[in-house]
Image (cartoon, rainbow, N blue to C red; front, side, top):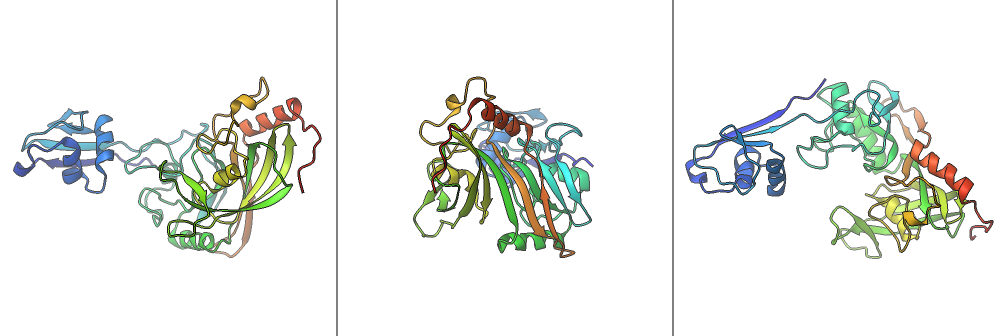
Length: 332
């Protein structure tokens, strides 16, 4: 069931003459969006003045001219395409999905039309999904980064949705990741306990902090080494809290940045360290391997796992052959 296009219409009032188009889009068509988003939509050709597309945010319409903004329905991954989620489990209240890397959980902005789990979910189940996380996140209980693959939960009705949210809030849901990192861990297993705060220099990112002031959040991640190579390691990571970019930032803080991570880099670690002929990562090599929770409607304890995606498995196989561990043990 495809979602329809959204259409917003209005007329420039006499007192509105002389105003920029991006300002009028917000004031007349959709007060819920920002000027910057309005400008982007205009540049994308979504806004018409008297039936003609205008792509300049600074254009000044005349009083009495009609304004129209058309937002097409979100793109939906085609059946069998690399971006189509796999259904690991489904009942009347919820589903467990295997999300492919490259697929958003939900649009990053209002009126986003790129493919996402949320859009795919609406095309599958129709309208009426729980929107407790926001109208742009129907059915979405928690999120994985766009570049992260693996298991995630979605809910079809309110009781299941709220029950899962409560388990996340109480830290009762157990998650397990696989990460391929640069460097050699100091320990076979360890706990990383560093608070996180938004990065004022890079909106959308976070960094570690020793501060306990407002705006900082506690964050705990446990890891265990599964395999080591010459200059690389394969880790199991279990986040005990669910903070934005937590696993990526925590591992980078230990000088174990994840291969392919475009944001959280450390020192000279980078693709140039990969052995000659090794496939280059095209995304952050982080995979949500398993999730365990109590079914919010039946009380049953459930665990779901999914295997490594092809890109991670291929690089791990190459490293095992081309960069075997020289024999040094991890520190204890």
